[in-house]
Image (cartoon, rainbow, N blue to C red; front, side, top):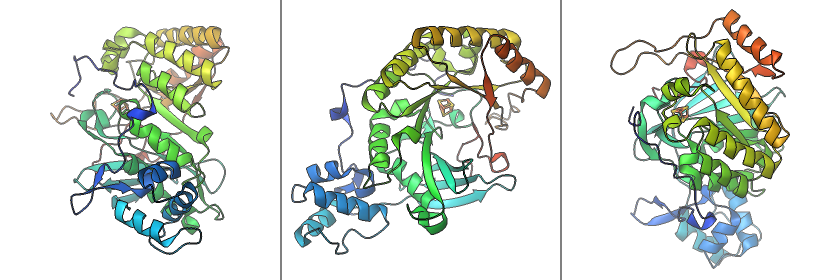
Length: 391
Ligand code: SF4
């Protein structure tokens, strides 16, 4: 756990979009830096390849996201423009190492191998409406933040994912849907949640660029309001998300509203307290008009006591006073992450039903309503907290 005891720096702040990573960050076989075409918006493509007009770039991007070869003639794209795109760009892939469908619910976990041999995980989540799915994407290989209840946190941070590698996860899931998940087919990707491996606010340039592509009508055409970015609480990232992607929803992992317990569960508390994170979330809500989602993973004997519920109710009340909105509170049952690398057993156990009910009752008595999140795919290690690229 590389970050225990260390200060976790918030690198998510930035002066703006000009700091986004340069296009063509992916090396081709020839060692040249070429544009990963599924990772750019039409405007970015037209800027990067001056021979291509914006309208042509829209058509090329649409072709790429229909899984067609962009070198194939298409109406409205001149031959010279096609050739320029073929020289400047390519469509790299993540290899599907394994697809594991849960036997107990319709969740599917994908293990995807990057060109440099890392494995990242992505989960297909069924939504209430039949044929609609959300995709839980990873933003980093591993994670530096070392939350104690999360399998990814045990890996440490290996690297950030590139924009196209984030977008490609959605494309892989979409390909597995009936009719390839096209707008006209009965199955479709409706939303995306950044709650897979990694802290998205620690790779925010690429996460924001990926959101631009996901929501672009020529690309994946996912409504930005159906995209949620979940953070352990990096304040400047929360503020930047509000400024640069104001339609996107915010999710926050609380751990515990009692600082000592939170420090133990989430080392980020040592550098950015829950109060700081909530202050940023208040600004987010005021700027965007969106209520955030707050998530608490209930751990038996650790954060499931009524004193934790009361401290949480205090925070909710303050948030409400400041913004006029209530956070949507998700109670997540703990999903086993197994023994640690040193052989020590699973550090936590799921809070039993009575304790969970008492916790939720204590909240309700203070006027705070919560829902129990169904966290599916536990039999294939696809549930919340379980993503660790174990294959
Ligand atoms: S919960 Fe999120 S931020 Fe915490 S270690 Fe896991 S991936 Fe990282």
